[in-house]
Amino acid sequence: MVRGSDTAVKRAGAVHMRYDTPVLFHAVTGVYDPQNGTWSDVDAEPARRWANVTPMSREVQRATFGDWLNTRLVIRLRQIYTDDFQHVTIPRGKYAGRYVLDLERTPQDRHSIVVIREGSQNGG
Image (cartoon, rainbow, N blue to C red; front, side, top):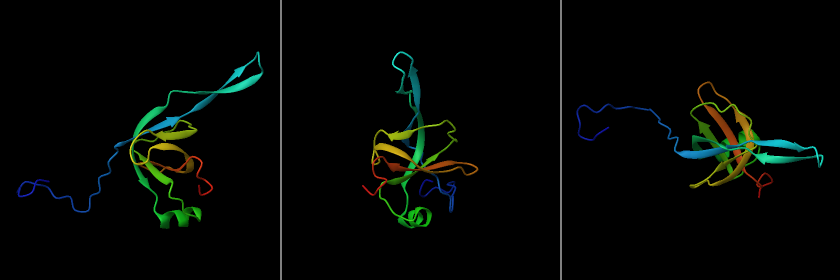
């Protein structure tokens, strides 16, 4: 909307999310070595998706989890991500770091996941 323009369209009450944070979904696949008789983890190429990343409010966390951690985030994707993953990485920005899944919820039109910074599940 341009100020002072008679042709500007007002969008009262409309909320537009920005999907401006890159999120990398990491899947780890096991490879069996028959000579050694052991399994080794091999990192597959991470899948990059653009997301809307926000911290989860204290009230919602207490209602959902019964506790509050300042390292818990909500990642909202434009399209549903259906592949299995072990962890996600946010490579840059305010929330940069490695996160593990805390809760998964799939609404009709979005895919929202709740993640917690790796190593902080016990309040650290």
